[in-house]
Image (cartoon, rainbow, N blue to C red; front, side, top):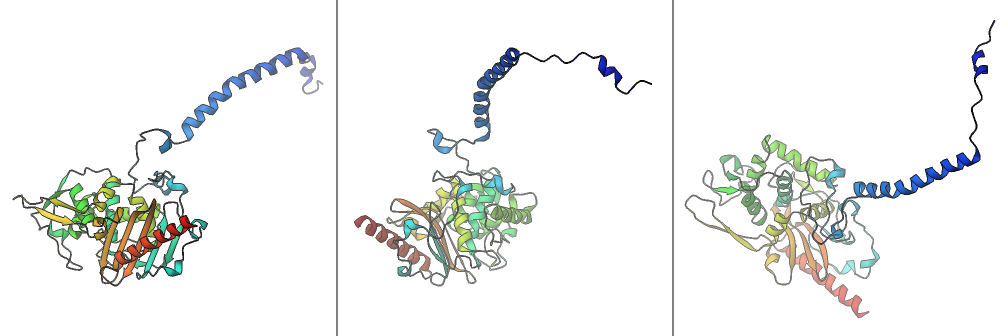
Length: 357
């Protein structure tokens, strides 16, 4: 009986390559690797690393974020300060501002936060207390509209659906008479805090109307890391629109990436013609600091409800630096502006003290 695999005995032994042949094969393989490796590394770098804003003289800015995108994609904005947004975070203890006497800053607003462009917290008062934010909401409304890429030149008529039936606030945009482009509605909502303009934006941006718009606002908030924020309307009239000073720093910083928001919220006044007869409406910014020669305001929004008190959020330059200022729950009409001026003097005095040393 033949053994299993007996045929294997008849096969000749596998010839062993000489050391010269083996040496030649190794040298050939090494030479191929030396040629191919640089090409692989170069191609990998070109594919995996996004272009940096400082890599060319005129980089194409990426202004808008998809409101429905996942968080990782939504934070792919480049900040106007040359730092990737993904790496930016707030740091509560920074030696850079250790010379400032926080006890000397008498802030009157119920909640406040002052943060520099690098994320260093200069001052915080009740920064994580959740409060109604009133018309500060409209910054998120504008961002969500711009995120969609929808045409800003589409004319939109103000209708009875845009009436404020919750607080009965007034507006000069007459029902069924006023027609503005979507761009003009954004400008009117931001600069003069017009509630009908904001509601019209929420009503007409998505096929699902206002309900779908509110969902997009809350998705955007989550994408920006605003963990203690909720939106229930596009205007801020509902006191259930709530956030914290800490979350609003993130929102202001995101809003600064939108040229239309920067341009509109930093200008002092404008004139529009929303009526068929050509009658003009003149608007002034609700933040008087944009008209002050002492201030360089780059982004701002005010807000007021009885439940929210007086609110103000800003991105502004003080001295040679850029700062985020958030004031919530102030009782007096001009208290947020007074707090802003106190912060400005506090920072400038501290800077002068540092230079003197």
